[in-house]
Length: 298
Ligand code: GRG
Image (cartoon, rainbow, N blue to C red; front, side):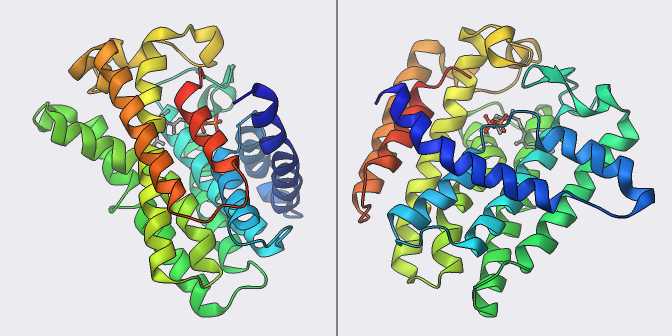
């Protein structure tokens, strides 16, 4: 994979996502203006838009639905949920980070109450937006929202974040580690792969194959996150490096060491590639994305 390949894969989709998010994040409510400003600060702070880009890519390359407006809207909802999770993750009660994407975190830029409320507001706006996405059958929208909610609530991200934050309550072993990574990070990435199929009413078998691919890609993403926490600088990462190490977090690196973590990332990348070959993608863009997940440095 060349950098150029990845850039061309992401850039046109990223600008469609950015433009649509700009439209969603507008308000005429005088009293909510500052709240929207805070939400906008985090949504437009330089995120790579990987999750929504995956959704558009699945639509384009697997289901041939180029420029599907409903899928773009649902993809923006997923990005708003991702942003809410990062805002709350950065709070003093959680990871307590001052920087994200090279900028002050939201509670540093504004204050804690604003950051909590901006996260809450992004979450509810995401659901409202998702349920109003055009061109999907109502039953598929409901199946989609159910998939999304189980990926981010007690069946997914929040449960993973809880175990990650309260790790001392649990045994420090591989089962706990897999639980944290699968729920905290991989489940929203997995849903980014399955949602286009669910929303477009594709068969169960296709959803299952996408789920397998998305779970492996999501695990790969988080294992690599563990690796770059110790191998990259804060400047490259745009957030505090070696944070996992300092907080004694349960990670692939802390449990297995750096070299073994790299081997495990390799295995997960192979798993994702094999899963992608069970689907009929029209181009190699998903393989390029998996390769990026594997080789990324930030
Ligand atoms: C607070 C409910 C709640 C959940 C937080 C996602 C999460 C759960 C915590 C984030 C911890 C973290 C940084 C995990 C590493 C994986 C990850 C989500 C990285 C950030 O994703 P990118 O690289 O972010 O896609 P950008 O900045 O590009 O949007």
